[in-house]
Image 1 (tube, rainbow, N blue to C red):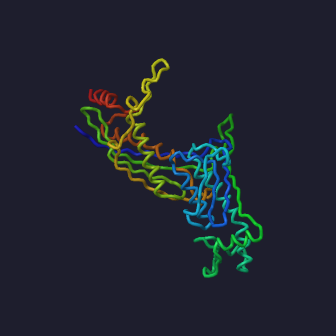
Image 2 (spheres, rainbow, N blue to C red):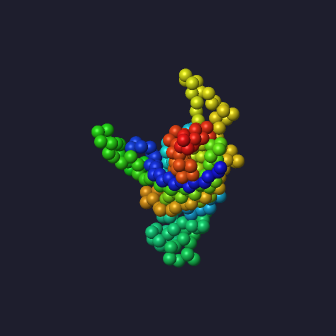
Image 3 (tube, rainbow, N blue to C red):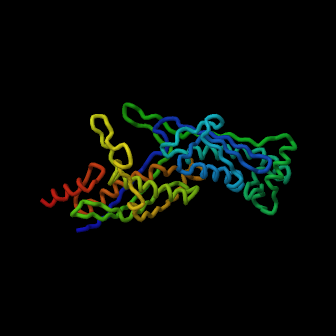
Length: 328
């Protein structure tokens, strides 16, 4: 017999290193042709940080993303950005890039103000132009302004660094401010359990995540979907078996992970509640995407068959044994 169940799980997760300094820095140069060069130590290991940082730089500098070139994770030339871990890079390196861009455009804005005979505060950068806020017909192209800067011997460079406002935890009572911001999420899983074999099939996952501001919504959805699949593997398949210090599951033939055939319908839901200290309101979404998944699946299994499993993964053998015990 096959039974279905629905389970829910919530989570909150601190962004960045716990109660420790974890700064990131970045350099930006605006070249004569309007190209923006971003130097960052942020290592993109598939999470899409290079694209996100390019978007942040483009937004702040008022250019298109095609105008931005990101040079990243080269220890010979890029400044330190800390580890790509703790879901921190969008929040911390994103802030560093935004600050570097803000500094790089300072000379540009000052020059444009003189060219347009307006106050610097009245200017914004958009669409490769420096525009008067209240009179969009009055502007100077960024490349034209750069020509003026170079004629005056002025370069357009910027550096920025950001370190979250945290404090170390007090060893006596555990109090402190370990993180500057937190991610929040709720996930709901629907499963189908075969009570004769113990097999569990995840049918659907609804994943709602507070990301502050989605700099790249498609990227965020991809991270949520990927995180959910890691959670599926954690809940149902993945298990490191060790015997007297020897790993007995050293490869993918013995250490099982989900495949496309195991992928349920995943519905990523982006919740935007801007983080005031984040770049354009953004914060991390990497690890938070996988944290509630296993709990939601286990709760759904309980809803389906009334058996509570507290030892992962929930293998068919383990679940069938508990189902039979519950029957007896």
